[in-house]
Amino acid sequence: MTTVSATDLPLAALRRSRSLRLGWLVAVLALLVGACILSVSFGTRDVALADILAGVRGQSDTIAQAVVAVRVPRTVLAVLAGAALGLAGAVLQGVTRNPLADPGILGINSGAAMAIVIGMAWFGIQSLSAYLWTAVLGAGIAAVAVYAIASLGRGGATPLKLALAGAATTIAATSFTVAIILPRNDIAGGVRSWQIGGVGGASFDAILPVLPLLIAGLALALLSARSLNLLALGDDAAAGLGAQVVWARAAAALGAVLLCGATTAICGPIGFVGLVVPHLCRLLVGVDHRWLLPFSALTGAILLIAADVLGRLIARPSEMDVGIVTAFLGAPVFIWIVRKRRVRDL
Image 1 (cartoon, helix red, strand yellow):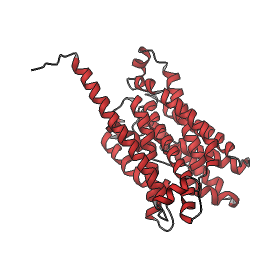
Image 2 (cartoon, rainbow, N blue to C red):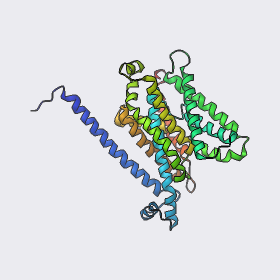
Image 3 (cartoon, rainbow, N blue to C red):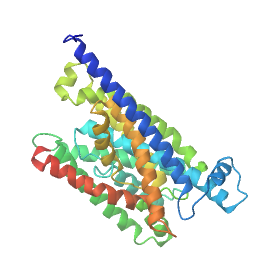
């Protein structure tokens, strides 16, 4: 009978864990491909496989093929936005060590949205590039403000104080945004529709300018994986292991801000994706951010595509914006997390 020494056990466990994670990676990639096919196939009008292939090749000889040509950039945008929000949520939860951290809950999305509305109403911005940088600026200011408010008083920026500061910032920014919009009938219609959050009407011409910011945010977030693992041990332990705590937290947060700002500029504020996805991914691959961050991006893309398809199917012949669907999906998860962790544990 063969025996396994004590030194072989950790290695065997590591191999099993890696095999399990690779298995989940294959499953998630397969789900992503399936979700993309569903997104192109189903909606207010169902499309056959032959029309899908023709539409992907750029043909638009029939109505079904033209529908596919419209849905392809919409699906691409859903993939990019979902991946950005899922990844940003995982980063923010790691930076703040807060299970409730989410771009929407921490006020980052509402800050970006408010900045865009101010730019439209008071400065007359119209180009997508202006929207992008304005949204990033607003998201950054909101993130800094929330952290500064939460840092006041005894104990510093605890998870509970961050959640409360984020909720207060979200309410204030949303109220101020509404106050700006109400007397401006010239922009009210478009802004109100955009505020709900959605991926309808996407085009590759609108997606291309967003890619540099998304790529920069993605790179910063993924490169922060090791630092986030160290920060999870506590600031003192992370510093003892060689991490530059302030710079590590700032770099990771900057990546999340870029992802959130770019996504909000083109899609509007979409909530709860960054909250739900990281918790689901922790059940699959654990807490190691080197695995958690890529999985959060892939799973976020799947969730947003699924929410978009569901919104098209349940509201036929019209459609429900993806921001409404994610709110219905995310609110119960938010309540579950609060009940599980309890307020005193935050």
